Length: 268
Image 1 (tube, one colour):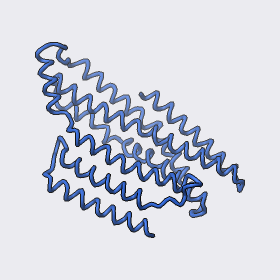
Image 2: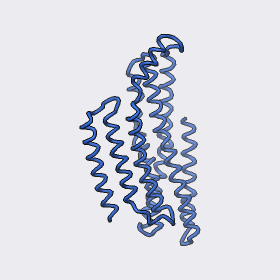
Image 3: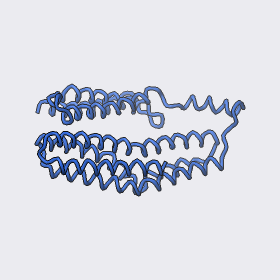
């Protein structure tokens, strides 16, 4: 995984470099500027996707470690050792490197329409490139340590063999502690809220024919998904579920605040 990640981040940096070259060479030529906008948008989306991989990897391996620990009756400190990746210095850079490309793309779209000074777009691009370069060196060691931890766990503990009573007992237990369907739905709703806003940003600033698209419908849709997602997530959290009244009171409060911001932005 570390080698694949290095290769992908290196490709991101190369695409960034090409996007910078097209931007510097574009000048005032409309066709060249349009090409730069397209290349920049692709570079930003590609960078976000690549920087999403470590999160997916660590979350996925976290579920694997938890399941293996339960199945092999291993000590609980294995999960604590896996969770140490969140305390390493590369953890913050993972977040910054994932969000910085979006900032670069949005400032670029604003600069292309004359609503933002080009300097701020250039600054966002260079900051994003610096972050991509940082995670190129910080994240692979974290991935290697995590892989070594899983290898050590698998080498020192064993799970029950298929077809044995111990395996049947384990399967029944796993079915009982599986993530509730509504909790899984909450994650999809929270992800959808973010994606709806990204779609509006792309239509508004990344296209020519849809720049007049109103924010209000998209913002309200995102607020609804956010409210439902927060409520279901809190109510059916398998580790610390809240009561229905507490979960939905918190969700509705935050949803109302988000809706107020949406209405204000939509009418401004």
